[in-house]
Amino acid sequence: MTTPTEYLAKAEATLAELAEAKSDAERTRLRRAHGVYLRLSTHEAEKAERAVMAPPPRIVPEKPHNAAAAQTRSWSIK
Image (cartoon, rainbow, N blue to C red; front, side, top):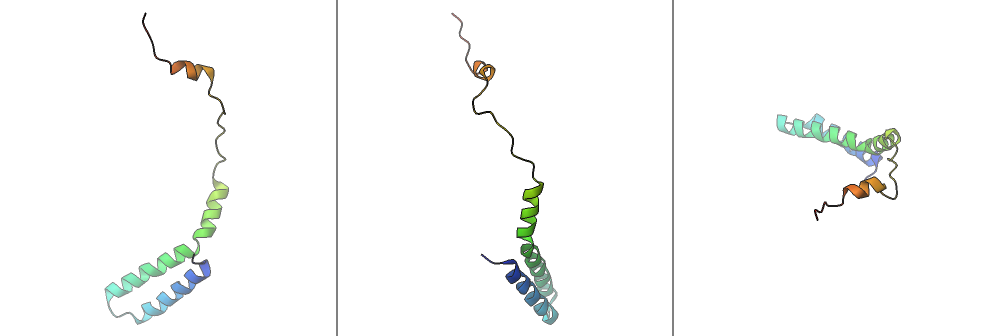
């Protein structure tokens, strides 16, 4: 797995390549790659922040309520 520091190094390398780019297509590709590397370098930190902000898991009863079990029965006419 790539670490955030490796992604930052790749982002710096793409900036160096961007300075030497000749065509618009190459500049666009390198600008996008630079943005992606920056985004990936902060991904783990953002993931931890989202986990802290997430609501706690919902409490679910272990056994279904008797009324819920009665509703699942089918009707029979005798």
